[in-house]
Length: 198
Ligand code: FES
Image (cartoon, rainbow, N blue to C red; front, side):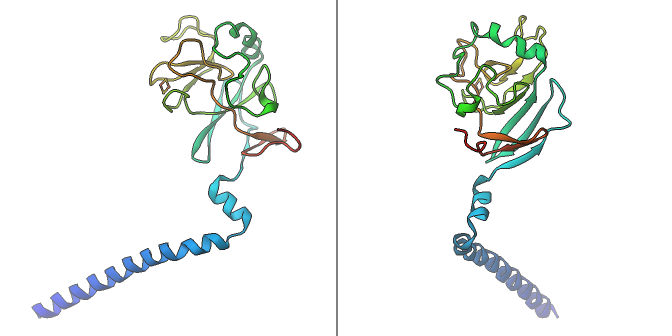
């Protein structure tokens, strides 16, 4: 009786082992399959474009989505937030984003395709933390003269509401802008340039 229990236990172990080996085997077997995927399936695997409905986004709010394993910030700016940008030129390190990463169609005074919609890669250019959006133009514990923008809590880098880094911060560059275009008024596609641009 005791032997039977041992044996049945051993059978269970062998069955479990076989399953594990089978799973590992399947993992190895999957590699050649990737080669046979269609180009679009391969692109999806590598991080194909992401489509996002932004119809519910209100002024001062931000959506965070994932593209290629990176957070993408999609923020809606008010007219007041946009109007303050020219004043920020004197405070930021690279006002025209000459040293920073953005598509040519976003290299303008708002760093965006549509002035009110800001799209950024949400990774601090210092050591990669996620900057926080503080959209309101009002004093903050970290800046009594805050004009709205992003604050990185890791080492206190400040960015304006276009993702341009202030002078003399740990972060060396403006937040990057990914490639993107508007499929229609409320649909944003992240990861590809608009037709004919850039
Ligand atoms: S990672 Fe943002 S300031 Fe250091």
